[in-house]
Image 1: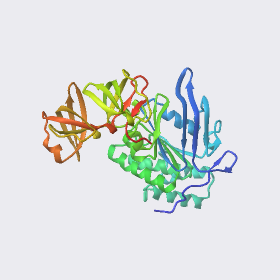
Image 2: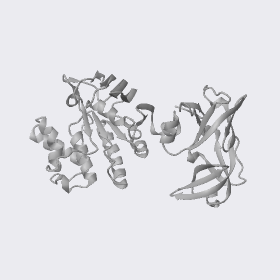
Image 3: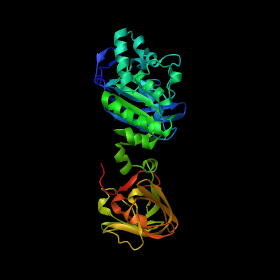
Image 4: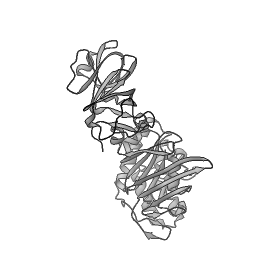
Length: 394
């Protein structure tokens, strides 16, 4: 791969050199009339990181991206880039590039002319333009396509042109607003890996917007999960999946078994919870100091891969919780089997590795459903906040 400068010196308004690509958002809100679309958002994005704003449609993620870009201004709060307050500074004076969902390429230009356009506006010399455009054509995998018109390109090639056009200006921050959403699944996956590889080479700060959980977890160093204009959780893809801090995050990231429950008793070191499948006993000592109250409602959450479906009569290891059930459905998913199990009046989903005891079960068989107490998470159904967490937390 051609040697490309990892990061160029960025400038804001007065030409003073600054650090590269850090973003600080402090207590930012955005309202349109009486409607508040962002509420008191605070987060820090480190230089050279790949951060994804993740959430359902209407959660405020694109609004936050537009605030960073300077297309709109916050109603309250402050946005800083490289330690400098950029409130009121126009988009063209911020050290950012942007890839839009609709790409906004010039259809009558060639690939080369599209990528070179911004450099020409900056009055860069023809020799330097030729050198830099050549670098980025190679970086995004468009070798030999420089003279093609945009109409002659595939969807994936057009995405690469849009990416190169932004990156050739060497911004310290690149903002990407769902740029892969219109592509078919296979091409989308290819470009996800390409984007991550390019980001590692350039060490540019990427802020990526998507509603696709798999896309976010595959590409990101950090994920910002948003809902209804608020940040629900910030963390690594692994931490938000394994240790969600709110009921929304638990349900939005991946699949989860959800059981309504009530704290029945607190006896010494044990906590007993009534659920639709029966009484669950959990060690109070793993509650990390959070208080449980007898009679309080709660929501029990279990990831499918933490739920074991075994033949009836299988012994449970010490500390493991076990219930009887009936296999209602089995679906092969490559190396995994997805079991739908009915325990009393509740359906539970488990994911089991193919092989061993998993192959001895069939639809209609009675079975044993087992899980470890450390994999249980409890949330308040009233606030959605983490009520109790069992196991290690970051």
